[in-house]
Length: 233
Image 1 (cartoon, rainbow, N blue to C red):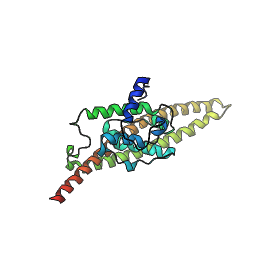
Image 2: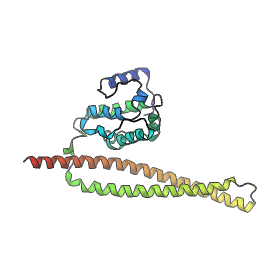
Image 3: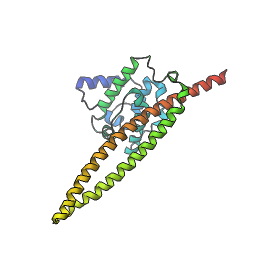
Image 4: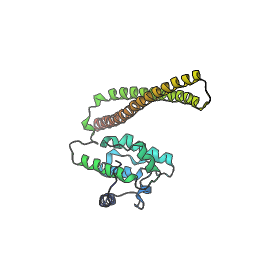
């Protein structure tokens, strides 16, 4: 995603975007796509059932822009096997020059890949069995619980690390106190390793949440379709 495009690749990407009917004219791509709305419109153009545009609010505030992109990551991009990292999102919402171009290029590749495989219809609810609906609901609740607990553990450890690091600022220590400090430093290193492990687990759980959200929405749509069929008979 961070790969920079050469001039020819950029022009080809811009030409591809120009063919898509968007709600706003493209003037400055870094600003135009910073709030995520036009990115949602790009996906909706190819997969109309995949995107509900009312979920994405045109915005100038960084908070709302991030909210739009996070919804895209959670509800839309995951169905395309695509994800925009947080670091990239922070640059995009600030309209950092060129930040959104690699992301759009990667998104285009994922869209093209899905279009090349019509049998793998990501918007077709018939792909799933409604009997599985209760299972993912229970699983996602369990994942959310684990995620909350991990975040609490991470915050507590970071707090302990800050307290221990404060000892560094004391000077002219006697040897015994210095020994204690060294022991504390080792404890801090251990805590840092634990925090890193927890962060990896958090990231994995967040990814699972995205996948479970996707499955629940598809199964729910499938169920609604069958209810509608029953009412028509």
